[in-house]
Length: 273
Image 1 (cartoon, rainbow, N blue to C red):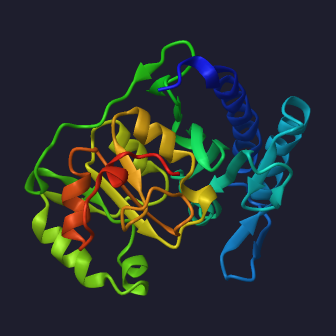
Image 2: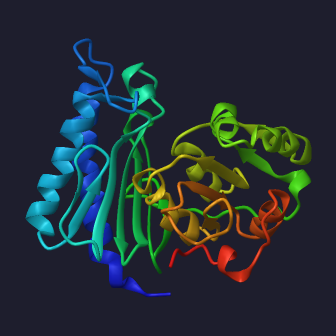
């Protein structure tokens, strides 16, 4: 593991989250929130746009040589060191006044997520990690290190499948039923929160489909530094496959095998190449 090589980047990522939280919370549950439909039928609010602008402005001042890839304004600049951001992950919750949404901030170097921050200001929670620096929650004054569980059998595992509709759309609805019968407990928590529950040792698996890099990149270092494993659903170690399987690590091969993919060392390594 690299030691404190990313300490300064992590400190910046936390400041980016502070700036994002100030903007997003100022518009949360606002009566005059502007909501527009995107071409893909998803929604964007004025808060999504303003929050991403705030992050980009600070990055332009602090890391002008780095690239940025955000959900609302696309990619710009260098792709070797690239900040991958989702200003409000869970926009549908946000626009309905449901507090389960987050700002996702990641620094990827040559495609590998090295720094991740997940901030959920509406419930007063934040998680962060960087390669070699561990995974943490709480705040700067009283951080608490997080660690995945040591559950080692599927029948004791608690999992989050995000939504049945999502699995049905990729022809895997039957797998959700099989999964529910094989594990101890299943729930569709949704968006960023289940990955953080996984990192804290409260779940053993999270999986979803039709995800972009900015949907999952920030989770990657947090789960990995907490001792877990992350890959695409088929075990490929990449954030660009439009799917993700995150586990407590020890069960990664078992979940891959359960879904019909041959486990291998790369899949358990939890780092995209």
